[in-house]
Length: 344
Image (cartoon, rainbow, N blue to C red; front, side, top):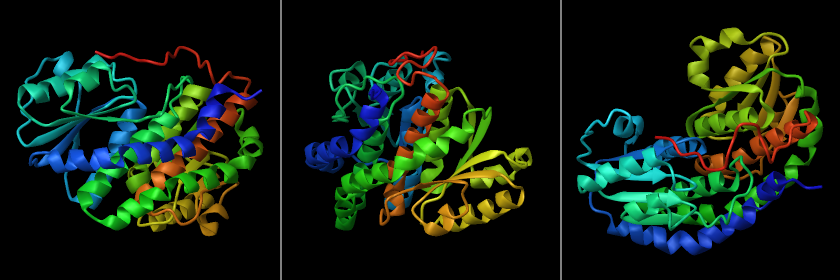
């Protein structure tokens, strides 16, 4: 019997196609209407915080805009009056319910700074505070672990970056996303078999860089919340500054290594890890990288690096799902978790 989580993972190509159809013009209008700003401040938690990390790289690379990630507890626990002059403030929350994210946007509104809410609930408290709202159009997400709401958040961020960049080629590349997602899901048919050998793993290291730094964090979160394995995410650069000492023979290491600017660095690290006899799991669109893996997870070819986190999220979701099933864990009811988390 198919789990709710599996159904929602499979739904993502169609949902993202719908999102692009419904939101492209709306996002262009928002970008055109925004007043001038010097930087972007983003408030988010959980998977949405990983989407914010994607925005940090993408807005910087494509739009040349610096991005800061807010510390929401400064606005709630410490009630600090943070100066937001020059900021465009974006709140990202799947439910739009978290008080600390709302507090950041309320502070921005009080200082007359422009605000955008990215949420799956256009009637949520977060949406009501913001000047502009971009809905995810993902439908009700029933699984506890976020899948379709995460990839739709990434897609909204990519669409904002494409609109800000003014490059029509970016819009065309966005339109190819649903097909790339379909192909990547189909290529993941063997993940169930590959996951079985990791059922007794107590820890997994997950590594990405650049645009896919966020993918490492999201894959690690999925593994933790669905399989209870202690998965820890790193940048490949930061990993060399100490944590690499934890890797020995048989240590499971998941590398996020699609083609692009970060690929050569990831391949260099893969060679070092192979020399240490690490057990490599690799998410990539290149035969070169996949050939290094004991557990290869292929991506659809031809997706530009700036969009690769959207398709690279899928093998991480599938791995966590299948590993949960192998371990006898119900992926639709992970222990201690609820769908909506409200942090102060």
